[in-house]
Length: 377
Image 1 (cartoon, rainbow, N blue to C red):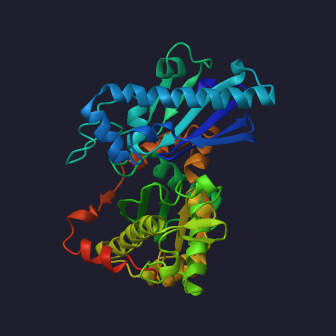
Image 2 (image 1 turned 120 degrees about the vertical axis):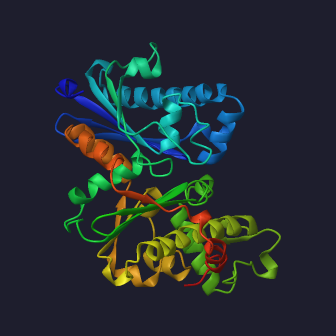
């Protein structure tokens, strides 16, 4: 792959479950253009579990879902290249980072093992293919494509790409205990104690990413709206709308907050907070010893920390340690394009000392989940 890095432009892609974001950079690493669009695979499920189940029911759906991505990526890329007057022959490399399911679908891997215990996967290291081998001969770009390796069925290349960016985008060293939260459709979390990466994943669903994008808002705006609703008495801390708003919901900050939307957010919020609590419990790391909390993802980029603490999404004791990083999966893909030697680094991460915590198997999981359901610290 490194032999093709001397041409002019490269494309980085964050292949998300709900949204797909891409960036075009030049040979100096300068950002030329970005784009994002909703993942068309949502027709086969809003989350990876439903898409895996669709593929298990009929393997034909794997190719259909891959074709959807190919068509959407092709349209997005060709639109940008046309707008910027860039030739397809100038594209020298593509890097795609995503969770284990999204990358497996792109490679047309059988998903049955990925969807059943013990959740095996084939992405033990990164995969490099020619673009026309990956996307078929009618794809207009001819170059190598790097697909990120994954640590487990639940901790994918998007998270690993995020981890390799930490030293580059934050001045504090990451050899001290830290918490990394990648908050999207799947809430992936990593707690590093200096030796071991304790990891878990929770199914947030698209509550924070797409449930309010139809009204041109972000999940973070919804958190602000809920906070305002609680403080004004329109929403209780138990997540119940005031009687006068139960039927039609209440408009706060331009968002129609309905009972169904509140329920979705309560479930997603509880899943994230429970994941944080369980990682701390299982790792025996005192919250006082955590030096940094890194929050990634499009939702995390716009998050209001005070309001997130107010509704109980983030523990108050972590407030002064939080750093907002934005889309680290896309930043990691750009890093891999700019510095090909980091491909080995992400492969080492994929084989690293990760300890997966499967929360649903813990005896107190349901109790913690119920406790964290309410909008209070």
